[in-house]
Length: 240
Length: 240
Image (cartoon, each protein chain N blue to C red):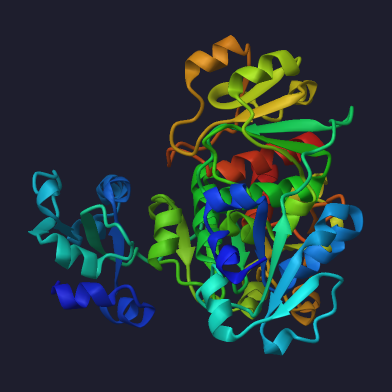
C-alpha cells in the first residue's frame, strides 16, 4: 500500500474504503504474526519499519521507511518504528453452542472497548456484538488497548438492537435495578446486553426484548461503575 | 491562585509544591461540591469559569476568565469552561477494622488508576495504597477517569513495599500461579497486592512478604488481563 493511503487509515472512512487497519508497535506486530498462523487472510498484511527494525523476522511484505515517514503514518507521538497494515478480520464464523454473546450498545470509549476485548479473549468462549454508532474496533486506540486481544475474539459489527429478539432465546441486561449478579440464574442466558457509558440502553427497547435485569450492587458513594469493569465482572461471574 | 500558577498544576512537581490539583468539567466540579460537604478542606477550592458558567452555583471563590485563558490552564483540547483548583485530599484517617487495603506496586497508566479508584468507591470499604514511582493520583487524567471517585477513597501515597510486612498480618498477591480467586480463603487477608502493568511485582519481594498467590485463570489466548480488570474482579469477589 502507498504511504499516503496508509496514513489515511487513521480515519474510519478510509479504513472502511480500503478494508485495512493499523497495528503498531513490537508487541502488537508479534501478536499479529501469531494470529496469522490461524487466520490465513492476515498473511496479506504489509509491514512498514524504520532502519532499526529492518532485520525484523516476518512473512509479511516489508517496506523500510525513514523515521520522518513513520511519524507521518503513525498514530502515536513517539512511534516505535514498526507498523503493520492489516486486512479486516474475517467476519466471524457461526457461533458455537457453548459460546455466549456480549452485546454492547453504542459504546464510545476506545479504551473501554480495548479492555473489554482483552477480558473476552482472556476468559474465552465469548462473541462480541457491537451496535451501530459504536466506536470502531479498528480504531488504533482500540487495537492498542486490546493488546492483541482483537485477533482472538469473534466480532460482529453494526448489529441492530432489534435484531437480538429473533436471534437469541434469553437476553440479560446489566442495569441499575435487577437481581444481584451472583444469582445462579445469570448463567441461563445466551446474550448479555450492556448500555452506552453515559446513557445505558433506552428503556423502551429493553421491555420489547423481554430482557432480564441484573445489577452489580455498590455502596452508593458514586453514580456508576466503569462500563469495562461491569462487563469484566459479568464475564468473570459467568466463567466462575 | 494566579493563572500562571494554575497552569503549572498540570505538572506533578508544581502540584506537590502548591499542594493543589485540577478538577475540570461540570460533572467533576459537581462531585467536588458534594465531597466538600464531608471534607471541610475542600471548601478552600477556587473555581475558574468562562462566561457561559458565570451563574454557576457554588461556595467556592470564583474567577471569570476568557476562553483563551481557559484553554491555557486546561488539560483538555476542548475545555468545558469550568475548572477548579483543589487542595490535596487530607491524608487518610486510620483504617477501620472492616476495611481492606489494595496495594498497587508501580502502577503506570492513568486510566487504570482512575478505573481502579472508581471500582473501590463503587464497592466501598477499601483503602488504596500506592508504592513510590506510581502514577500520581492527582494527575488530571487520573482525576478525570476516576469520575469523582477520587473524593471517596482513602488513599496513602508513597508506601514502600517493605513497609507492608510490619503493618499487615496476611498479604495476598494476584499472580500467574496461585489458587483460583473463587477460593473461599481469598477473604482471609487484610492486604491485596497488585504488580505493575508490564512487570508485576519482583519475585524476591513476594517471598519476603510471605504473600499468598491467587490467580484469575484464563483460556490462554493472550498473555494477561488488564490490571484494572484484575483489581476489579478481586474486589468484586471480596464483596460478593
